[in-house]
Image 1: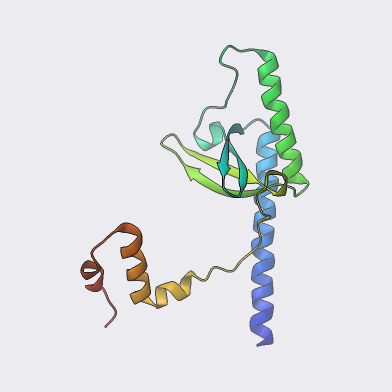
Image 2: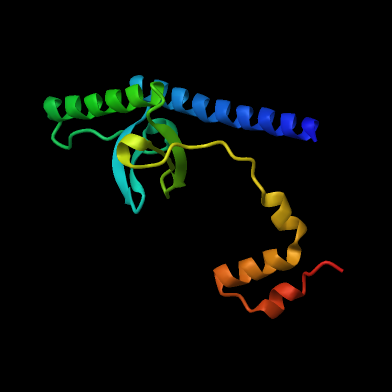
Length: 154
């Protein structure tokens, strides 16, 4: 029992380290101009900033008229986001795929988004119970259950 608990604690620490490293890498990409703010997602739980740039397959956002003051404003916003990522006030909360590439989503308590907590995925239990998995897929995708029932474990 103690060994399993130690393994879980090590796994949680590893996941936390990955989250932290993603935030640091994202801050570095912001400060080097590889990514920039692209927009803001408004969700029921708060706001998230969306980041992208040439490294993610999306053009870096700039003033359409080339106005240096607007570009400076965008750079200042990027610096603040990077600062909050480095201070662990923001974290990487996810990614979104687009037709042009992908975006990196960040948020934190300052924007009303709860702090990301390390969790050990329980997906293995879902796949071990194939009947519930088939029912879940049928419910989500509006599939006739008789189709999924063809693939039950024997």
